[in-house]
Image (cartoon, rainbow, N blue to C red; front, side, top):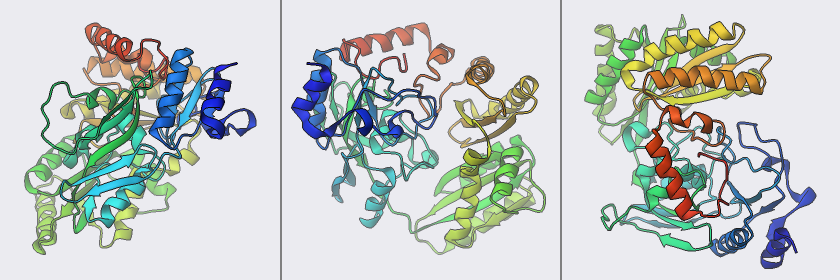
Length: 454
């Protein structure tokens, strides 16, 4: 009997093979996966996941976990020799505890479903990404996703209190802690958050909820330099107590997406456009204070124009430019590079990086956008005749400049396979060796997402 036969005998019809394995299991959103896995398991319980891992571990069978497949680093690509565990059926909100301010949720639950459940209970789930409708909680945790609310609420790991994880040998570690303070030895959850499925399979999580804002104020501001972007950020952090988002777009990125959406937001396209968003706490004077704050920034020359959303529809129109979904349809072979740099260096880096990419690929689209307040910058790159070699050259150019600026080659997308060969640009040999030792301790047979991260 083969391992697939063993899995079918133990788990029944939740094991799919042959034509039943859908095309969506070939690749994550990077579109770099080439092969379908030999089998896909669609569990509905932690016990089924544990059984699958135990059998695969005993047979040295590699396992790749797939969630919403919105990742951009190749981390969920399986290959023809792997068995996939798809968490698409392991969904649901198990509990919302209003006293503790927590939500217990299964790993396959789409982020937007969890967000809406929190709102219905009068809470905010602060984890928020552009792919909210498709990405899953387990994948958010496995990659330590960042997103647009990091400025106020932190990255994903900052919003996780407890985890249930299945180890490579099938052992279930259930530590669904609800307490904010719990100083009892090693913080085991942090081994798995951001590990990209290489150390264990996250099955459940206890997420921290926050009070639901009564509303949000959103402004789109025009600025003439990156120095003023930083100065404006400092002002926002000092004077807007509910500041929850600060998103910067360089001119080329803003122009491309506004034109794609058929939006004319300013008379002339500014060198920089920034979305500022403030959570409302219920005081009617907050809007007046927000408008006065923007007025002072205008008078002082920090910004030179500002649009304040008068409705949720207008706010969404600002965000539609920032989220840039039109780029996926209009730009062939779009690459979205995700890096992190000291805030004060981002402007210089963007100039140097843009010049280097344009010199090597004169016909390419190169544009920049980012969260800035959390040091995160994204680079949109598209070259008409792009191939695998193009992608590798782009990576070499960008990550070598990142290395010189002492930045990180991944701010929030993870490492997967696409950034693995460049990990030493951001991590020391001693750190990489420690990662390998942790991997060996938790997955001695190397079955969990092999070839990813390290």
